Length: 292
Length: 292
Image (cartoon, rainbow over all chains, first blue to last red; front, side):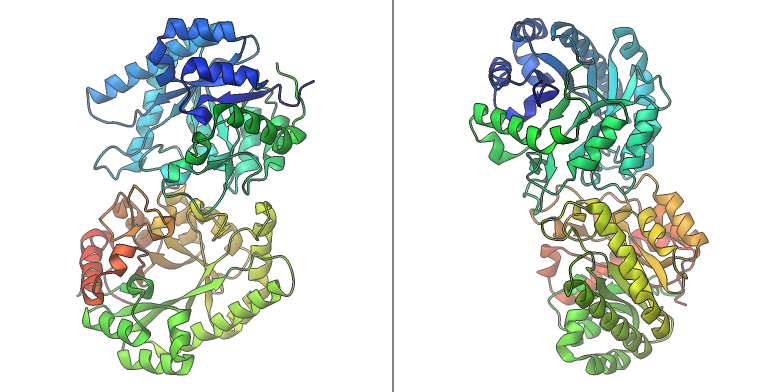
């Protein structure tokens, strides 16, 4: 059994690779699954992307991303919801094209405060309304929306969903087959309530995706690019991974790295290091290394 | 009644001023209270500092700071605790020297992960033990330890106390006269549980200090220097200030700005802008503008 059978390379980790390159780099590194982003899929078109994915033999672990629907005014709000519905369609198509064993997951990043607004509570309420608006389409398409809590340092410009507990509060208004959560180590490791919220997510069958990357200081000048290979920072992947596994999660585990230094390296080297770091820092704490 | 009678200028806002300059700049700006830092006090010596403070006629709103006691190994741990005890003594002396109306508050910043450690839970447990170790000295000295939750982006290198709720969990093991919390807008505004935790803090008489400064993105290259004048960012000072006031807090409200651009400006201009921004962004939401 491969120690990395459940590893998925999120395409953002090799950001400058086009889709065809990303698929071949992933496969050639012996990684069995890939998380895709909408932009490189759109570059070749959805139909071609699905064919390329099917040919690769890889599983499709998630599409990144829908959301950014905290806007208040029309028509921006309606446009944002339509965009999420298109992302749902893409997720369904890509899931059907990927190899067996992955869930049809669309990562939802809420969006930050609208320009000029200080109304965090209002923006958060609109996230709930927006999910309610697109949930029927997700259900009809067999797609699970996975709400991702982002680190609180991104609250104003990226995501007003800041903790796993808050993501679960939002998700629990819906059927778990339709709305779950992403647990991304980088975003949530600091949370004093982390382990109890992972258990709560498990009880509710809400864990749609587990993503691993590491945190180190000092943060780079661009705080978006602060992610490191698992094991290269301070995150305790032992306690977190054990808790996620004990909560019943057996899906793909993505490594998603935003890091200018990593992006500047050859793709094959990055994929190899991703696999090695995962095997060293994450695999030892998994209850099952078998892909579903 | 002055709209800024409860305003206190935290000395960090005019970081490059020595103590004598900081006191005169504060008084000349019509600000009645000052928050001090240990280093500029030590520069002139505690006795001289107390005399200068008494001569200034200003209130003393807090001393920054004690803490950094997450270290595990001896003698570092014992040294850290002794250092906090000295900071307690300094707080008591400065409080006695300041004008009537302020509380004897020592701000406690926990410290981050020890070098090479990934054990956040262990570091957090040691914070609790460290507070228990110094609490008797605080009680005997009539000083209130004010645990400050720092923004989660500082969790690994500055403070493993990341939320107001966690600070209250720590504080509630002690008498509220001995251990309270700081509510610093910059560090906690993002928290979905903020208002309920402020109410909890009020019920327990735990609010030892309220500090206001603003959050704006993009963050600067050095994430420590990301603070802005109240009103210059995205924080809703209305809901937060009303909740703090309704929770019963009537003490000094500090403005503490870490910002290289602000530090580069003339001290008198900074003090004036601090006062103006406070009057515009904070005062309108206070239930009482009278200093105690």
